[in-house]
Length: 66
Image (tube, rainbow, N blue to C red; front, side):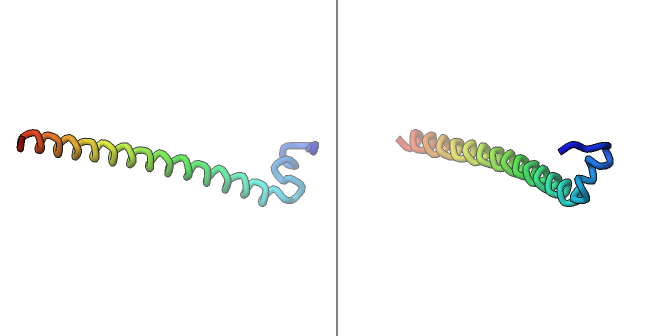
């Protein structure tokens, strides 16, 4: 599609509101997905570190009992 001006480009044949709203919604959801994934990754790393520390304490305790 060829546009005569930037105003026509932004208007998208009078469908600009829906076009740009869909683009904005898509990018907002992708950004939210990235932030959520990063948060879950950090939480998983914390959980793994806590489990390893717990297992180490159990191992040390069992060695003390022997």
